[in-house]
Length: 311
Image (cartoon, rainbow, N blue to C red; front, side, top):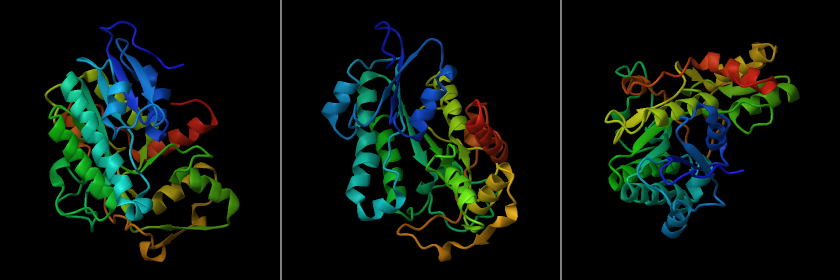
């Protein structure tokens, strides 16, 4: 049952992209939402974020005090290379339309973005703790990254009070999930060994931790520290995909030696993957928000959650 506005004065949090990984996690973790608000999930069947009429209808009673958390995105990194217009419609036009609507209504837009907005070259000695929000320079290497960066800019231009939250390498980790962790769990059962790239370094992020962080952001409200800002929210630390895969094997009691390191060159893809996309958490902490725990502890929690209850 979809939670609805209780009274005209009850703040509502609209979760856009509620059928996706992060939107689902936000609903699962709705106990972290402020007691003073209700939340309303909207899937692609309920709203077309690139269509002004659809947005106006779905968010018809949007007003001051309400928040819109946009988790919707065209996330097929390889598919975007051959469908740039489709990616642009969802990743650029959609945020722009939502932002125009929140600006007109006096509501608060929280727009979720990605590490792919960075060029993703070799690690920079000047960024030992990862990219800061203002470090974007040069062009993203993929259509997906370029459209997500343009979407950030479009949202902030249409609604200068919006907040952009970048994250990276998001997973849920269940044995049936389609993310990297879920895939490694299945491959551990199906193969004697798996080869995983060890030359891409990033910030693995447990979707549940990210959802909790976003609820904390919502609860804190549209303060000067966050409105008009770009923040980074990932689990702490850094890892390669090989590191993550080896940790998954360890978590299920398998020998990590069954995971073999390889290079990106051995697995060519239509869209190049960034060699370095670690995101610094300084901006999140500076905004007074709780830093997300270390990625390895989060991975352990994700595996435990799939066997029992959420942490």
